[in-house]
Length: 102
Length: 139
Image (cartoon, rainbow over all chains, first blue to last red; front, top):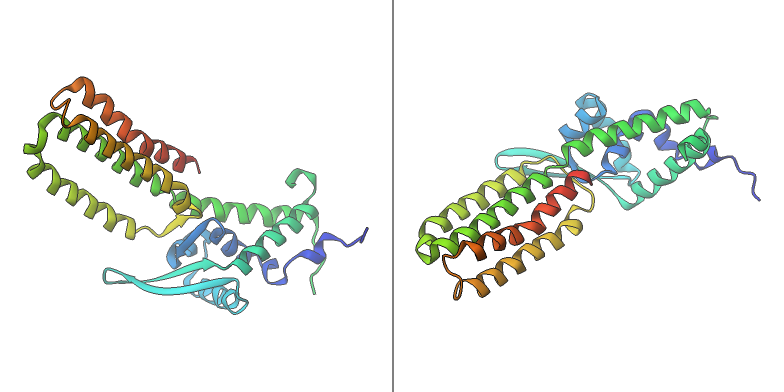
C-alpha cells in the first residue's frame, strides 16, 4: 500500500480549468477546428491560442494548418501523450471527487 | 507543485470538462446525416435501376455524381469528427456496397421491372448505412 493521495497523480498542466476543458473537448474528436474548440470552451481567440501553445509545447496537442477551399483552417488534435495525461488526470479527479464520480 | 484539491473542486473540474466534451461532441455528429443520405441514395439508386433498367442510367448517374460531390464538399466543411468514426463506419459502407452489388447481379437479369423484388432489395441495400446513421447519432 503506497498511501499516496490521488492529488499527486494530477497533471500540473491540466489543473488549469481552461486547459482541462480544451483537452476534454479534443478527447472527444479525431481533430477539431480552432473556432469550434473556442466556442465549445467559451473563450476568446487569444486565450485559446495562448493555452494551445502551452499544450503544444508540452506535446499534448498537435496543431495543423490547412485550407478548405479558400478558407484557412487550423486544426487541433490531442496527441497520444495528451490523451494519456488527460485520462490520468480525470482518473485522479474522480478519486478526489469521491465515489459518486467514480 | 500541485495544491490540495477539495472534492467539490474536483467535481467542478470534472463537470466543466464534461460540458466542453458534450458541446464539441454535439457538433461532431454530422456523420449520422452523411450515412443517412447515402443510405437513402443507395436504396433509391437500386430501386430506379431495377425498375427502369439501363435506360435510366443517363439520368440517374449524373444525379448520383452530383449527390456525391455535394456530400464530399459538405463533409470537408465540418469542423470536427468524433473519435473512432472511420473505424466504426467502415462496416456499414462495406455492407451496403456488397448488398448493392449482389442485388444488381441477382436482379437485373431475372427481375427487371418487378417491384416485388426491387422494393425489398432497395430496403436491404439501404439498411447497413441507415443502421450506421442511427448508431452514429447515439455514439
